[in-house]
Amino acid sequence: MRKRTSVSIRKKGLNKIFGDYKDTDEEQVSQGDIKVEMKSNEEMKYVDRELTEEEKEALKKFKENDEEIDAILEKVIVGLGELQIKGNTLNQQIDRQNEMLKKTNQKVERTHLRLIQQNNQLKDVLQKIRSTNK
Image (tube, rainbow, N blue to C red; front, side):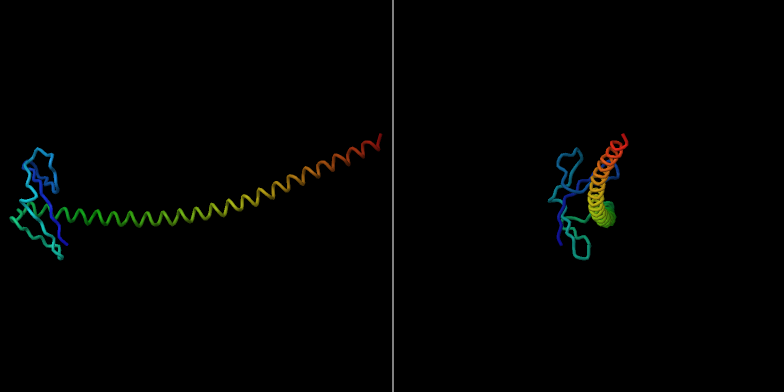
């Protein structure tokens, strides 16, 4: 795997910035000045000049940071997968409960209609009883 990059070096301070930064006030090392080639064993080969120890250390730190970010992203991916499973389980449970609520609502409506009918029948019976008692 081959990678080429340019390196921007801040002369004041410890930070090294790597990549193409064309709008910076600091002195830049152009893409033609340094070429970094990644070998399969992750060893660096420098075509135009050797990097300083500071630059090598910065590249090493970059790699460590990338590995740390990759590990964190892996945890995020696992967490999102677990959340998806839990979400799907909740969705299935809600669907089952909705079906149960539909059936319960139908039973309540039938029972309500039956109560109305029985209430009307009781009214009729009471009216007949009251009319015969007069």
